[in-house]
Image 1: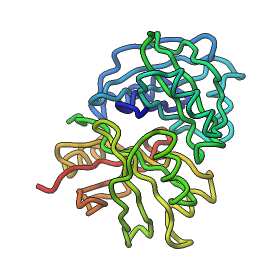
Image 2 (image 1 turned 60 degrees about the horizontal axis):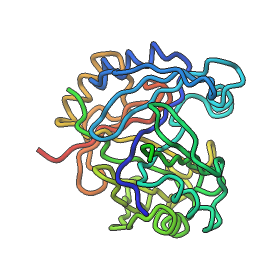
Image 3 (image 1 turned 120 degrees about the vertical axis):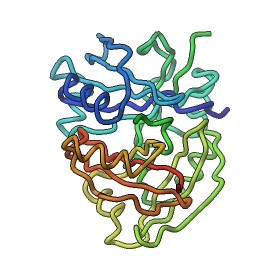
Image 4 (image 1 turned 90 degrees about the vertical axis):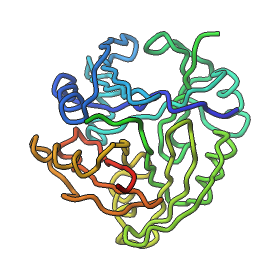
Amino acid sequence: MKPTHIEHIGIAVKDLKAAISYYENILGLTCYAIEEVTDQRVKTAFFRVGETKIELLEATSEDSPIAKFIDKKGEGIHHIAFAMPDVNEALTNAKENGIQLIDEKPRKGAENLQIGFLHPKSTFGVLTEFCGKNK
Amino acid sequence: MKPTHIEHIGIAVKDLKAAISYYENILGLTCYAIEEVTDQRVKTAFFRVGETKIELLEATSEDSPIAKFIDKKGEGIHHIAFAMPDVNEALTNAKENGIQLIDEKPRKGAENLQIGFLHPKSTFGVLTEFCGKNK
């Protein structure tokens, strides 16, 4: 199975409002949605660039994965999400090939998509998400 | 001016051959080119995912920007390149809006494209490239 496109690029920021202003005014993009994902303790802002979305991520709590990421590495690119025709099958296939998973089964992510993460230890340092529509 | 799409995502790796194997065997992508960019002291491997390319970057020398990046942050996502209709105009516009540039004028990058980088200090931690065809 291969991805159809890059679904989104997740970017960790400290100040969502300031970052939205940069992406709108310097890059000419339009923020079309702001959404809070409570179980990840993040607030997200979405922009479209061709078939890909930019997803800015601001922590809403100190124990958010995004707060921990920024403490360790600073602001910057957090993950890449590949659009997969079948997220469950893609995760299973990765595991069978020795890849360490963060999510053994798909779970619900932003925009009501099915998502699952691979561990960056197995993916050459890139936090990698598989992402797809509900079946 | 707004970007038409994400032209590529640059990913810093220690071992190009091992990383190519992961992107081919786990993600199902095909490496369609390997190119050395001598002035950046990197060897690159390219994969297509929809309208975007994944560009793996391995340092060919200890003073390569990629070697320095890996020393500091480890392997992982290095930069995002936005496809811009006019790289020179996009750089000028960013500078006029107070963005710190790495490249004041476009220069030649991989695949014979015109490229220019914005400094991550001005772009919320994301090393950002503008990228376009020769005029």
